[in-house]
Image (cartoon, rainbow over all chains, first blue to last red; front, side, top):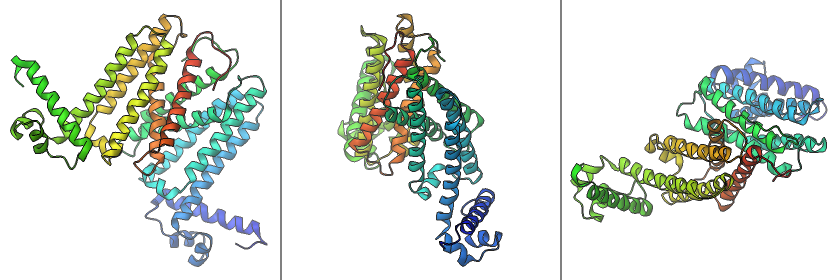
Amino acid sequence: MVENDTNAENCKLTLIIDAAQKRFAYYGLSKTTMTEIASDIGLSKASLYYYFADKDTLFRAVVKREQDFFLNEMRQLIQEEKTAEDKFFNYTKHRHTYLRKVFVNLTQLKMTMDHVKPLLGNLMEVFMKAETELIESIFQEGIKKKEFNNMNTKTMADAYISSAQGLRTLTIKNRNSYVLEKSDFEEIETRINIIAEIFIKAIKKNKDESIA
Amino acid sequence: MVENDTNAENCKLTLIIDAAQKRFAYYGLSKTTMTEIASDIGLSKASLYYYFADKDTLFRAVVKREQDFFLNEMRQLIQEEKTAEDKFFNYTKHRHTYLRKVFVNLTQLKMTMDHVKPLLGNLMEVFMKAETELIESIFQEGIKKKEFNNMNTKTMADAYISSAQGLRTLTIKNRNSYVLEKSDFEEIETRINIIAEIFIKAIKKNKDESIA
């Protein structure tokens, strides 16, 4: 990449990723060609290959941008003037909405996470690690503000993100179809909300006596 | 099946399932034949087919017996003179040991849950339902004994079993190999223990102030 014109370069990358995202969303990954993407934005095929070595790399860039967009939104959420508890519940809510959208997108592409996973490399692991760090910082803030009891924030954040992700994985796995029904999303949401409530109940100072 | 000699019939079923279990464990499902199982216990092939229509049905009977054995052990555990909290933690510990054993058995057969699942029919769903009912009865006992706060025991038991199962599914899914390492089992165990502690922390009356 040319070093002396970063903005123009970034702009070009944005155009390419936008075009790829649209093509993938409408026609699916397998039915989209690099030539079509290049032609959509008036770029030569050679130029496109200069930026992305192949279609899989470009697909990863699309997924990575969506993940970064969600993570940045969540980083802003953490800056808001709210209690750590509110931030935690907001995170849970936004996470569900985001992952539901990802799932619906995959369904439109007639792809499942099992198809997509080999293409993604370590993107999912990196994403879950970033999520765990965000949750950890909410827990740390809660301790600092005396909202939450002392705890091992790292271990607790890992347990939260992996159980939320696990509940999702379990429902998807129990479905033999790649299409999740509205009721499946509701089941996932109900279970994750209960886990979120239980975490807050367990870590919050001066708890109420009733739950669920 | 002959009605007037139930004990002898049960005995025969036990012998068949024992023989099948041994063969499956040593040689795997695909390399075991119905003829071999029949011959191991001096039964004619026709007699064997009288009891089990095919090898998959026999495999399900083996799995079902193991599940029932575990569930019966857990039903006994619930009868013990202990606090509901102790029963809950004991359940968690035994569940982990049992499912680790199941997993190791599958690994020896060079099979994954993905291979086995289509053979199992609804056995896993029925098993998880039975587990959820057992956990629910521990929660109910805890409320009755004033150990636990009031809660929707059904929803909470479902959330617990599905998150414990989800944590397990997530780790297995993140492995591309069907062989889980010792460290994977430790990771699953650590996370599940934290979730169990968090549940107890959230539902228990007069809680301590520190966790994890």
